[in-house]
Length: 599
Image (tube, rainbow, N blue to C red):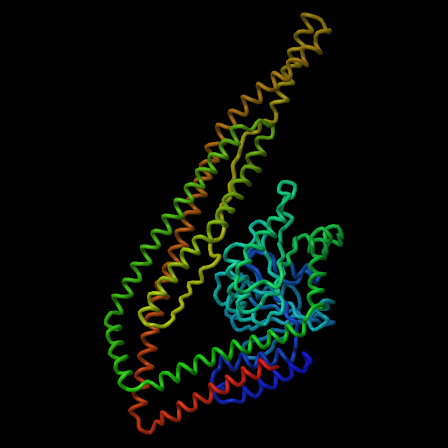
């Protein structure tokens, strides 16, 4: 059977399933299956661009299509899904969740209405933006999707990204060359991509122009080894490790200025070739079919689980239900005390996380302070002012940001551990799986840790030494004759220069070092306060979520048990018929899964 015939058969199976009453009654399953039917009909090859915020996804897409169309900024910009498809004339449609479509203008000014900084209630109504553009790569039924950052703290935008990912035939995952493959990124790839069978991932190491390969000749080779090792032991494997260096900003600048040297040096051409090869070669149609089947299986298994739970509850006899009802009364009596215990546990863990963070920050600060002071003390050059105000200030800021980027994931890991422990405790109490979500991922951001130190200018020490040497020579000429002047002047100049430079440097260092230490201490204090606030906020969310989960589970259990007891008391309720109906629904799902596998 050809891939085309297989997709037609799969679509027919889906359309038949959508006629079933129990599928129509389940809004979530019905919506996803209808979307799948439409996607099979459109049969796009979907390339999803992913990455954490500030990785340059929108800049990359702008460089790819050769137009500064999508909003870009130092802050997370994309607040909606932006789907680019081929169209001879640029056009834009705003697709709403309710199915309505509004016309838009395919220009940056219009798109900035939907950026993160301008986001309002309007964005929550939007399913995605459909942008038609005459980009040759899209001409073969390809769609490229720009997504919100996967670690952005805005939960609604994360949901938009996660719900779109299952449609991906290929993923372009942007990393930052300054800190490639953070733990949050690795976890996302494993849990949200590989676990769903999405293994066709091309890694783009953006901001590669920041890498000094003269200082680190083995950077690229070491990064490749690091990436291979990171995913070597995963249960779900990458299709292949495909990775390219990139400077999206340089590529876009080259396109805008018509500078081929910038474009060629940016790496964008190699990325285009890799993407074209991915689309045009290999088992594209078979892989699209596999993605359709995987999405269908996920929906059906979830639907099957819901029906089996209903059947189990229906099948329970009244005595068992009353026994469960009595146990529930005990749980309700313990409710306040148990929630208090959870809050106390989280508060204690919060103290531990704060103490560990402070200890690490103090150790980092002490080492950084010693190194910076030593560097300043041993500096001998004339450009001391520029050295302190530019290089030292940038070095301190870079070290602060690097520490924050490397240590912040550790805080998130500790917070997630607390969250899992609380969820495990509630799950054990109720004998059912409970998931909490404080949205702990990539929340700590570097901000406001700038260092601005003013230093004395010692560069005029040379001028002063020369003037005095010349003056001394003039005096000697008056008393000893002109023949001695050049020799005495030349000999005195280096000695006087060194003397003046040493004196001025000593004075400059005496003033600069305390100022540097003061500003470093201020930055560290601000960073510490931000970290404390972040930890407190996340622990507060964990407690609130646990209380909500506790109450929700109790309420659902009570409502379900009460309803079933009432049903069983009602003689007109034919339980046998209900159970038989549920069994028939489960059989339909199993048969559909079997038919799907045979396609």
